[in-house]
Image (tube, rainbow, N blue to C red; front, side, top):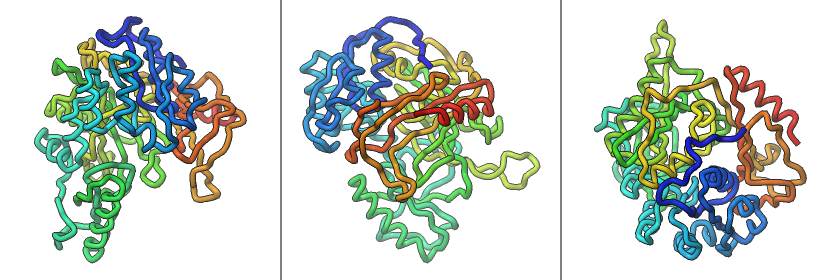
Length: 423
């Protein structure tokens, strides 16, 4: 499936783009840039010297080193590569430096365009406690939080409760607590894990929603104060707090709940003057059945100030290229459509293909890819090809397969067929 762009012209001010990432997201960004007539520069580590994303760009620059810390996380080297190759802008993709406010500031200080929200917005929304406060101020539907420390743990918390890290994500620094007696230990353990993973041990407590649905809303905002949402995605199928299957729209919420989360996302975006692409995440609990006594509870989780892994399902149902709009907004162009122009067509489902061994507790698997082929009836975003060596240095995600059809059942059947017949 090929993405279409709204105009085959360069976004103003951007003629050469450095893609500060690897794998499928680097390939995917390069595809849209090429369609827009924007030259691309990629970067690579030693293990990625022959990677697909190096062939997807016009120029590839070696960063040296094997691990992320030695290569893709070296912001100074990435910026120097952009300057040395005459780039106008830097797109971080997701992961690595994508939500690093200091890196965004350094990009701008070097005279380059940062493709993303402002460093100030990244800082504010990257702190879950600060983001929660902003959400409450904006009137976003949410539950309250309790700010705590390992020295001061309240003894009157309603159970069950969730202890969460203020920084980072991916389920690290998170503990479900069902007994007051277990709370101090959970706070200490979560803080310790958050310190190790993110360098910040700040944690907070919020109500734990049993069997909640993970619903997220895609937003776009420009520098002129225009903001729109592009509908919601359902991301409830997870393993170890990591998303596995995503779809758009959600098939498990009512029209009223859909309106509440989408309007809430817009309220928060307007409140902070959001500029760029982002995702506002919610947890929805309770029943959307009007005859049920179990009232719906909506709690704001966080804002991801970057492109999401699952963004293709939104592109499929809206017909919009999110990378194109990231580039146009970063280049100072206004959104050319309003909320009433956004429509959802059909249903899309995405699955992630990962190099993990289920027989070994889903541990990452390494080796050489012998064959890789998926039919063209679905969209496949990937950074691998036959001969690719899968390294333990990087995330286990190999590809994303996205099916779009008029109905959810049709999308699921199309996806299942593509996966059954894949090599």
